[in-house]
Amino acid sequence: MDREPSRKQVTHDRIVETAARAIRRGGFAGVGVADIMKEAGLTHGGFYAHFASRDALLCEALERAGTDSAARVVTAVAARQARGASALRALVEQYLSESHLVSTENGCPVAALASEMPRQSREVGQVAAGRVRGLIAAVQRALPADAAGDSAAVIASQMVGALQLARALGPNAEGKALLAATRRALLAQHDAPPDR
Amino acid sequence: MDREPSRKQVTHDRIVETAARAIRRGGFAGVGVADIMKEAGLTHGGFYAHFASRDALLCEALERAGTDSAARVVTAVAARQARGASALRALVEQYLSESHLVSTENGCPVAALASEMPRQSREVGQVAAGRVRGLIAAVQRALPADAAGDSAAVIASQMVGALQLARALGPNAEGKALLAATRRALLAQHDAPPDR
DNA sequence: TGTACATCAGTGAACGCGCGTTCACTGATGTAC
DNA sequence: TGTACATCAGTGAACGCGCGTTCACTGATGTAC
Image (cartoon, rainbow over all chains, first blue to last red; front, side, top):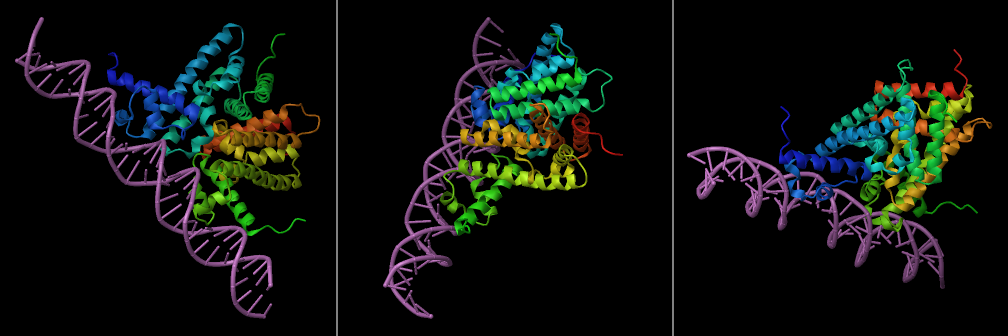
């Protein structure tokens, strides 16, 4: 039933994956069709055999950035849990880690693109809203079942805001301190204190 | 000593003010030299008599957006305090108000531009970092003197994140609910409950 | 198994357009006598 | 007060460039007999 993908599908996937990294690195506006095709090892002429428009690529790329980033987080969170952390602690420490601070390109697309989202076309905007909901849902899954109904959205906002301000301050002591303070605040409020 | 501004200074100011609104509305990338000059009632040819480059305008505009927005917040916060709110409650309720949700153009430039900031030129990036520090300092001033040293940065992150996610979700029930939840969470944690 | 042909993914040149930037010029403002 | 000239803010045409998009073509892959 699930036959192996055609040559075209493989290429299509490679373009989308390249674009998923490029939009997080350069923003929606900072990414050109020709750049992406070149980075994917192709010439720009073939683009419209794969996508109806640049906007259509942005939609697919944003969706892909979400699933890619979620997969990375799931792996890293599982490793932290294996070392004894609660689900929420593992998620908070991963999301607000220094490695996430510097690797925008492979990180959460909501943190990388949030302030550009309301300015996109309707199609891209709807995918973007879906990504925000997905992030909130991921936080929800890391919370105990008896947590207040809207905690997940509040915690997600806190994490996205802190990561963005830390990046705007720079990947230096100032930015790292903001991340550390936010980790402490979130864990003090929603998790048992660390064993010391 | 402070003589009245020259004709050129008046025009310069008008361009900067126009640009300060435009970057919050359209993002750094969504704003062209010709657009801004036209919106300021001029032709684009005169631009380089006022600014060394587009980037130089972005710096001035971002700075101006910060002071404009701060002035508006100060006024609105004072009105809330006059009605009996604490400084922090007044700030939180103003920043996370539905009017701030929809009026990006006159609102906080950090919330409007945060995810684009790390992608700007060094000059613009430094002004941007300054704006982030200014926002944190404003929160600090609204906190009691005995508040923990890094609370201001954490609260600022929470507010910026919530406003951005609410805008990405849309100015509908979903976005408004996120703002309301964040207001409740911040006030429950840092302020006395409202009188009821 | 081998040849002939159709299909299809990708190439590269070309398009119209809007961008940031430059510059010769105009017309209004201000100063000198 | 009135005229002559210098200064200066803003105009509008032009530039080179890179963008998103189109399209005729090529060369490889796969199918028919």
